[in-house]
Length: 406
Figure 1 (cartoon, rainbow, N blue to C red):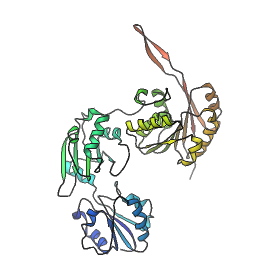
Figure 2: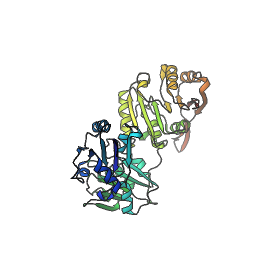
Figure 3: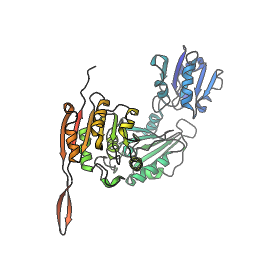
Figure 4: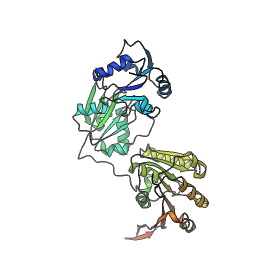
């Protein structure tokens, strides 16, 4: 082993370490890992580094040390599956880094449960302060959620059932301390797991169930489902058309003049890998966006207080933009946003007033691909009969930036 940094996946226990891995560990000058992993090597005489709460501060120091010493980092399971390996990949060129994989806790859990996991979805709240993506979890054929000492499987189940009580009878399992003396595997209806205690090294597994009543796709939810101020919300039917016009892709989306945040929340829920920045200048509406994101379990949405012209330069370049409010600065806003769009990016702008329509019709004419008017009429009761009452029509303007050839 030459100078450099090696991250070794420890699997479920010492028996999962191969002879080659053990040789690398013996030759190390610096051995870093959690206390549990370091305890496996009482005879190691080199420098020891305990990985704990300050891991983000320790990683740069280990990288710097690896320039002059042989550094080995012991990781749980597989280093690149919800593991510490990501922090080294992000900060160290590949030629100076070696990562040796091992079995993951999720793989071991599936083997204990006899679960074919090629169609499973994986989530983690372990050490993460983020919203629980309850909708994605419950919409999965099978789901495996990494828990921790605070957000245990029982706590996660209680959160899931608060949002969707109909999942109470869905088959599930709690798996904890895999490979250890206190290994725990408990199966039963999801509601039963809510009463089972476990350690921080645990997972919740939702098992396949053809009879499960899953929550519906989050597209065009009723306006009443969202907290919103004085009707400042993109209507459900318009929202559904906006999703179609945005042609969502993984990447970055700006929801400008976000109001209730309904467009950004639904976009994030429909497109995995889409990070949404909801820009809103009104403080009360910012609080409502956060409340709505929490209610629908949307960890991919971040609220950005302020006007778009003030905060634009702080945001990553977008692949998709929805503009729900622009006012008198619409020309400046539209031009500056379009300039920040990635190659091939899409900007969809909504117009309600005649004045905004006139401005948008003349905005970036060479990139304006489509104008669509949406008219919605709702049935209203009149005595023993119903009449259709038309709402104010809304016009969508679709702009696309040309692709650049590499």
